[in-house]
Length: 223
Ligand code: ADP
Ligand code: MG
Image 1 (tube, rainbow, N blue to C red):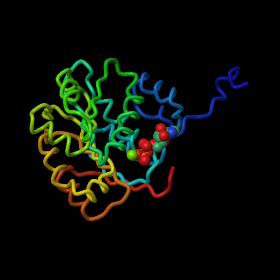
Image 2 (image 1 turned 180 degrees about the horizontal axis):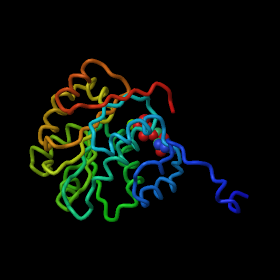
Image 3 (image 1 turned 180 degrees about the vertical axis):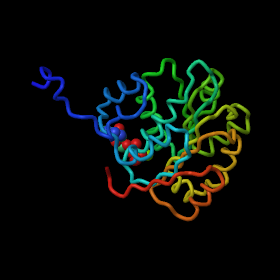
Image 4 (image 1 turned 30 degrees about the horizontal axis):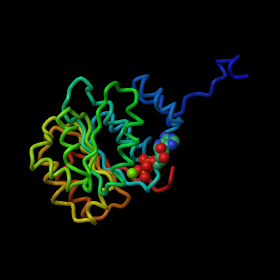
């Protein structure tokens, strides 16, 4: 019935993705994924992320953190520029794989988007070949990212967005120095986003060394 009375459409709510200033292609992709309303962490962080601000966000597993940083970083990708423009560091291969899959889905509207996974336990050869061909986005685990930096098969000097995903787990796994070293290779003008399920002192310290006036967001409930 609503189709006959377009004026009766429900008013747009502040948590609709369409309330963000996103390109029509991105909104269409979100629609095709069935993402209508932003989750709490997305509604709180995305407006800031889209403004280029550093954000430190604490939210439980399953709250939609990947799309929060993913939608943000995708808006800064120039597909005709073949350099790594976004780097997402994850604690484990399994988590990196999940992030990679979600970013590929979210980035479907960007023609020729190239995302390369750099995780340990996989042969180096194909990773090196993919990097040589040119990648816009790298998702990986700290050890393997460092391996590529040492070999100079990965350059991070054009990175615009760095994401530390599940930062508390990386802390627990002893990746603090690795994270700092990797981030040290990116431009200081970058945007740095830190996502974590908990907020221990170690996270505050890392944030202080790698982020610039970050806005802190805490989401207690699931959505
Ligand atoms: P987290 O990283 O916080 O654990 P994920 O980013 O993995 O959470 O997202 C959890 C699930 O929620 C995924 O299956 C994802 O596809 C889905 N999801 C994320 N954002 C939305 C949204 N706005 N609407 C519907 N589903 C969403
Ligand atoms: Mg996650």
